[in-house]
Image (tube, rainbow, N blue to C red; front, top):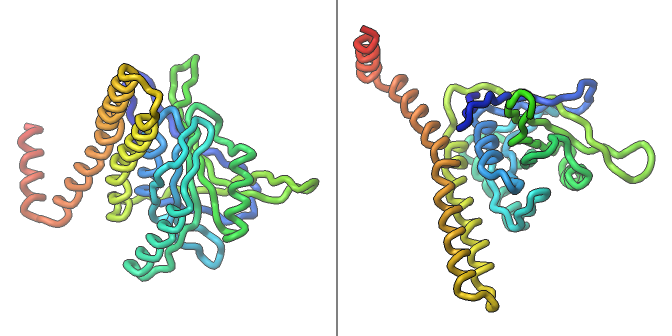
Length: 280
């Protein structure tokens, strides 16, 4: 997995995991992992959230094949909320994928980001996870901690972890337990994950539009404030292009390159010839 930074800083990807877990392992396919990363890095000021689609083996190993990016109904730096309608739509999407692939696809987990804060789940995260596990005991939670920088080495890090909630030994509170997570490599991004990645800019635009319309509808705003809000709205939309669309364009170009090499022998020979000419 390749990460880049606009500044001259190294970016390190770290998996956090505590051994001794008796809970199922999670196999996260690399294209779904890529979509999660792009989503987490799309905004630095608020948390983002999505749902994981996959299947569970009899041995309770959770396989995550794709993710669904959710539109936020509440955007804050320390929490994120979605509407019940989106949860229902996610279940419908899982059923569609099950019919398309012939495999028992379902919603198997959720993920969200922790910008500028620790990767470990908060008490709210642990309680939310416990609520999901009441519906499905194999349901897992993923957290991506991003925009973290070591002030001494100027090294940026992206941390990720997987967890479940268990009843504490004393009292009615819950505590976290880390789940082993493995990123399964894929040669190229799959069709379903590509659709989710393409959906990200549209969802972010809709969120900006919802926020702007909500503020713009206030009756007490003076004309200067409305002009200012319109300028901020336009700026936020323009920032989506370099922040989100650029990385998506790189992924699509790589997919096109791989497909051309594998599916068209003539183009493959032409590519080899061009490579040889460039080397000469």
